[in-house]
Structures are given as C-alpha cells and as structure tokens.
View: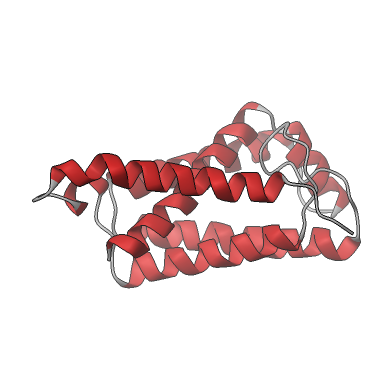
Length: 165
C-alpha cells in the first residue's frame, strides 16, 4: 500500500503547490478560464487554490477517504478543463501553477487523469495519515518523503517542458 500512498501523495504535493500558486497569483488561471468562457472571477480562483491547498495538506495530516475523494474529484475536473484547453488549440498559459508560463498539453490531461485514479485508489484502500504509514518503522519516513517530493518535482518538470511539434 505504501506504493499507492507514494503516488497519491505525489499528486497531493502537486495539488498543494498549484493551489498555493493560484491563491497567491490567480490572474493567469482566471484568464485561462475566461478563454474557455467559464466562471473566472479572481476571488473564486483564489478560493479554489485554497481548497486545493487544504485538500493536499489533509491528505498528509488526516488521511482517509474524504481527502482522497476530494483530490480525485479536483483532478477529474482539472482533466476536463485541460482537455478543453488542448482541444481549443490555444497555446496560451493555463495558469495551473500561477505565474509559471505553460500551456495545457496532453501531458496535463494524462497527469490529471492518473492523479484522479490515484485519489480513487487511495479512497478505496484508505491511505492513512503519513505519521501512521510507518508507525513501526519511523526511519522510513525520510526516504519516503524524498521519493514523494522528488517524484512530484519530476512530474512538474515534465509538465513544464516544452513539447516538440
């Protein structure tokens, strides 16, 4: 179960970073939503960012079905929005990570779908809070965090890498 927990928590790290970025700098995401003719008020984007951050933190601290289901629902919604952006053919920034300039690509859709699946798996076999994952072997927490944060960073760098056409 620790492998599924690692992938789920990688998705939570990405969600938390994206949420914090949107909460601080909502303008790019607001502009991207406006291009899709979706509700795009900056206060709503900030609120969405805060919700993302709360879900991500609760995945680590609380664990269980509720944060995992919320993470899956958020990523499923992001997959739909990313697919709409890709389909529109627009190469303008998606605003996923605040001011970091990157257009939505098929990679975004794939990552969002896989993260939603990871959330559903974590909800099906409830992933406990991180402090309970390795109760008997606390020394494994440090390498586990390195894998989770490193994996999330790897996915992030893959997302922002320009696509070859």
